[in-house]
Image 1 (cartoon, rainbow, N blue to C red):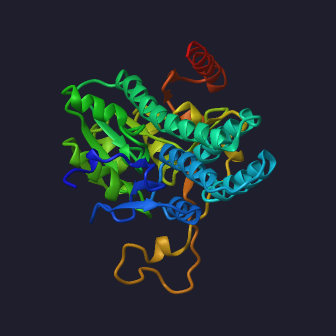
Image 2: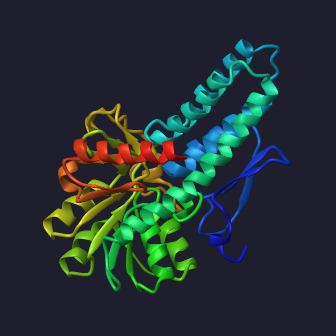
Image 3: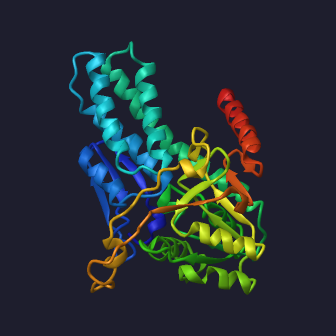
Length: 361
């Protein structure tokens, strides 16, 4: 493959009963396309970050539970639903912080419940349609987020992003990178600064890779350089994604995001969260209620190094995410508009717009 932008991050291979993904653990050294057929393979792909990013995880979960449903042998609805629920709970355990995982599985479970009176093969077919719709919806949502985000910046701006909220975290476009891609298509000539994002280096391995593949002007910086480039006036806005938004506007995103937000506040740089409404969890009151995933020690001490870079036996604290308080966030960009403080009020309007749009069909 010549260009990673030619490949959807997640796709359903119906003929072979598989989910086809880009193995993101191999980037940027090689672009490897792998097929996931079993539930264990799908679970491992999510946990091991072969597929990552809240939207892409949600699409993978929807396709994964459809494949599980296809393989269920059941004589009646009750037995089918019991096996379906067991498979869904298993997939849901792969990653606790990204709300899109449980959101997609709940949405697929809703299809099963809604069609309880129909023959099992028809239920499975409805699950296939819903999985494809979740995928197609992700593409539409990301493009809409891009359009809304683009309204916040101007040609020639310097934009900073953290982690990877790009095409590799979704099916296409990305969330935080969607304004960048749309602006690039329209000749905005953005200057992009991408944090490396320790310890898994998603910014270095993924964001700088995909943006450069797409022909954008991207500069890679270490995590601890973001305040410096802001102080120099090189950054006009920060765009980041997130894995969960609490009802009060607190957001959980890749570890280090809150430090970027603090620096942006100090240097009066607008700090924008780009999030589909599926990532807004109105059942989570504040960021303090978000469960933060802890990752293995070796990601800090050994991964990416030819030799261990820390003394044996040293304690390691390795949270995958941190919480950015809502008072550090200038606005949250969704597919239904831009939410601003107070978020408890603006989210109501966003969801009213969403309900009206869904009712219209």
